[in-house]
Image (cartoon, rainbow, N blue to C red; front, side, top):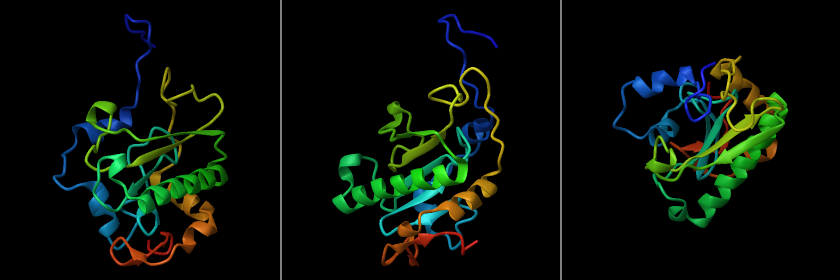
Length: 188
């Protein structure tokens, strides 16, 4: 593999080219996805009262999840206390489910605040939960050599749904298009 003049190896994530070159919607994906009746096409794993969980369509690793509030906010300090609590609670539930479903050894969890920080959708805050495994090259599984994403998004979604903590499904009240807080296995 080629090494750049600065001695660093290039980051290869060829599956992301469809996202980079593809048409950009004027609508916010984090606002439109939870309004759909089925979670399958939108890759939704769980719907909470104030936030929801979905698979990243262009993952850095199998099971790469994102937690987003339903409300369209781009800054962490714009979240109210209940949204912030649920964002972190669902992040914890993501970790639990990914450990059960994929036997992840560790996780990278983070929010890119602002376009300059790497946010692809800077106007709608979302937290990434990326499962990691021993020997996957530290921060990104694609550094040095391309990591093979060995599972389809739908297969990953089904495994995560099966492993989702039952306590997470007990949130009360409708949200996201009138749906009750739930893991999204029954809807599609």
